[in-house]
Image 1 (cartoon, rainbow, N blue to C red):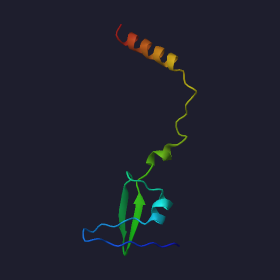
Image 2: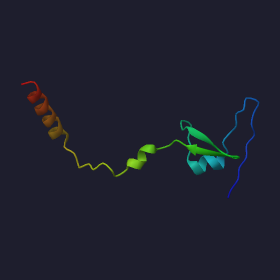
Image 3: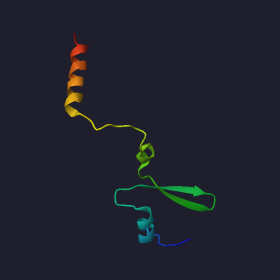
Image 4: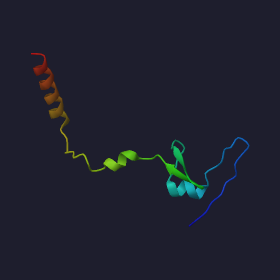
Amino acid sequence: MKTASSRITSKFQTTIPKAVREKLKLSKSDTIRWEIDEDKIVLRTNKANFLRYQNSIKIGSGDIAADREAARQRRTGKYQ
């Protein structure tokens, strides 16, 4: 287990050590979640939850012109 430390400022802020940022692949816009588990704190990332759906939606090569025409036909049929 690797360890890293950082100091808490007077405003109760701290810097995430570089080794941790690199390991978790954190960037400026990411958010983190603090969890308290009895006498320890667990830090988790809120990244890429959408990836759990990877390969669950089957897509084909796609034909934009055919898709547009099909949408027009549906729209035309709706108002007749």
